[in-house]
Length: 417
Image (cartoon, rainbow, N blue to C red):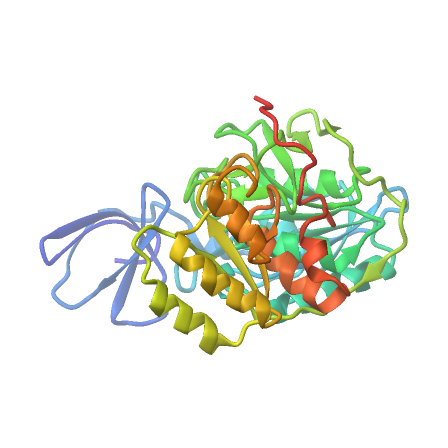
């Protein structure tokens, strides 16, 4: 049997059928299944039947003959492509059968040839990590890299990012940067080796958004399960609401800021936005990382959590309370103690819609008396990032949590659907 053969492999009572791929070790077989996934199988005790020889031309797939070359066009805008990891620009490495994310501008054009001719591109790698490994240190590095690209003349920036923590990174850059050009985060829910991958459409729509007029930090992802429209979400109001659907991202509490029609290649904005070149570039990457997010749930051991909060020696705490912003009555003195020690304690809600209002019930009034700050309808994750930024950049961080800084806090919470 050879790479490219269609095989049936049986081992330990499990049968897999697909195309045999090259493997980096002699001890394992790599089989690409019909659904697009690769599976690694220990050769030992494996029973392999060749169903069709040379079913797939691996050598042709590895050929560099169809590489995209970047040609500069004076009539096109310049878009900087910045990678932090994730799968959007990844391709299949036929030496191992695995999906890789080695990245530069030419790699992206090879992975997404539909990008050619839309802009002049520059590519750079900030990091190459799984997004669950994102840290505030990388946020700072990313913000500086984006700023450098804007200073170098980029008309827009596309940040390619894993989807799991994209909303946190988008929030961080929303506070760290006043930007004269669009900064568009995008990613892929389905890897490039799957027929249902969303990487092409998301990348194309993100570039179109980066060429448009909304000079904000945006998240560009599928608006539905179909390949027709990408939604443009404000970076501080977006949330990943599904683990695997292509339309996993939603703007909470409002309609998306805009949309990109994939086929028509048009960008439409539905609400007010910061216009291109309305502000000069300003960079404020300082963060106070001594902030935590605490989710209140019934049955929490108040004493245990009180001891944890005391020992953590925090400068800020965001509480994700119930309903209008509540916690168990016994927990209020713990929060009051933190406030008395100079800790900024901000209240958000676990509810996906609506805002905190601690003036309705006795518990809420007691929280206000304890010095807890209402964060309105700011999303809990966004509130944590904002408090980290506010503690490092504002003289009165508690007051900053009550006011909108980067579109995170809406004036009113009203039904919009």
